[in-house]
Length: 362
Image 1 (cartoon, rainbow, N blue to C red):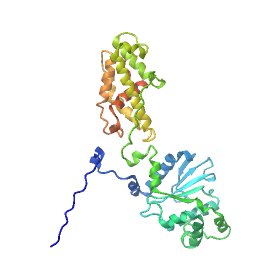
Image 2: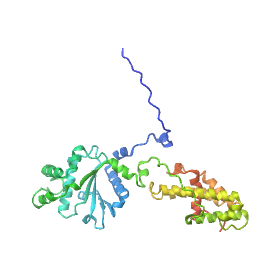
Image 3: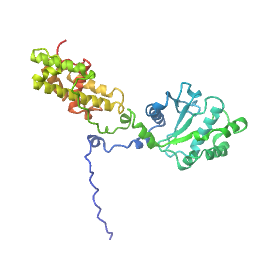
Image 4: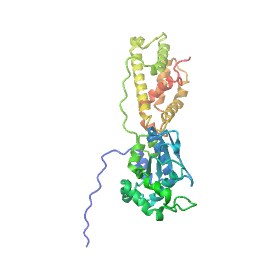
């Protein structure tokens, strides 16, 4: 009779699952998502990564497609001279295994041949980029330019000569052989998929492409005692609402001191405005351009009917609109679950700052 060993139940997780995990299961790691891209999606991702994560390094970025690309997939140009200036090449390979020397030989051959024939100046650096990286053999060769050159020449006739163009065999002879002898093979390098992810994570496109939750937000700064220039307009709208409520002129925030409820209300609105401003700045380099503005549009669309309703005075309108902002459904918006109560209130005042909401009749 077979003895069965009692197996302990798996340990329970030590963190609470998010709503997204309940709906979609555990998140897929970005590096795993790279594996399921099509070759075309992979090139598009590399173009996005170079354009956004490496933007400080290049004047422009171009993607070359089609059979006549002469060995270039994505190029980053340092100056305005394009392929005749200083540039880096990013060779995109989406294979089921790490790249081997056999895959690399034709690509190295193309760079050597087409730079020799004057189609372009050889790139400053040539990167192999693949979702599974490069294998050990290729990695060792890329780490030793002399060995890479020697091995390239050794395998040329068998692995490269007939893989450069579709119309001719390119033999390693004469002036071309002399050119290869003098060529700097240290330009050939590889970038690991983990490095790609880490750099892409600094761009506004990361969360749209890979999902996940935003990192923790820093605490917003407290409003200074004096109203700052960038908040002047919405404060003017609030003072007008208070004046209408009290039926007397209120020139500035100092005049509110005799009405503590109004003074406290203004302080809360300024805190909310600064909260929303901190949210906007926090998101600037983490989500696609326009994402926060679309959240403002959602809030605007959700409260505008309330704002245009009939109220005894502007103060009542302010309170009704900010209260209405709390019930605007944001489930379908990518930032909806990240917006706090103060963000919603503050966005109302951002809209007032742009004159998209008014508390009194002009």
